[in-house]
Length: 136
Figure 1 (cartoon, rainbow, N blue to C red):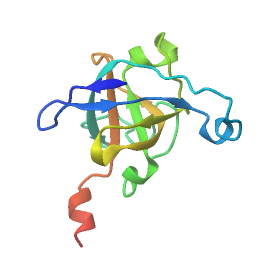
Figure 2: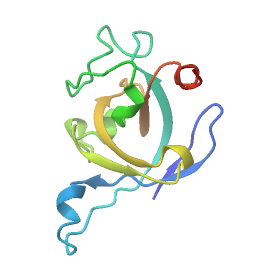
Figure 3: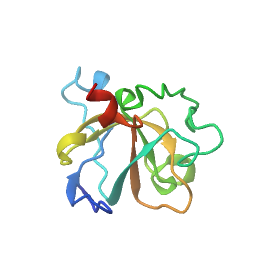
């Protein structure tokens, strides 16, 4: 299992990142899903210029983000050391299962890359001002 050391106001969770071809692998019960273990820091980000690049509505995998429903995409960015392009285990478009995070558990698609200064991180894409928009 992944151990997540969350920064700022977060606390430690267990995180299981499993590359998934879920829809194919569950058809055949004998197919084993590889489990990759590491210690990662989990954070959340918004698709805005101050947290991304000059084109915040397009991910590194070239997926278009709907800024009003970003959380609904269930996409994550991974640090480069976790991505195949830089020698890691995951590729863009892979589905991972996140567990042990309470409200962020679920299946997510690897859609983006974090800044090169980060290592062993996962970043959840979130809709800006989600709390305000859901209270109306």
